[in-house]
Length: 73
Image (cartoon, rainbow, N blue to C red):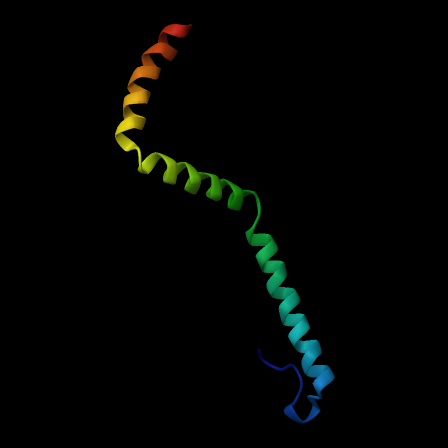
C-alpha cells in the first residue's frame, strides 16, 4: 500500500481508511474476475477431470455413440 498522504499526517483512522479503500478495490477486482468466463473455466476443469481419468472409456463411448447419432437423422 502506498499512502496517499505524508507520513506525518497518517493517523490510525486515516491509515484504516487507506486500508479499507485498498480492500474495496481488491474485492472489486475479485468480483470482476469471477464473471461468466470464470464459470465456463470451472466447468471446463470439471469436465477435464472427469474425462482425463477415463480417457479410454470416453473414446470408446464416443466411438459407439457417434455412429448412432449420425444415423439418427
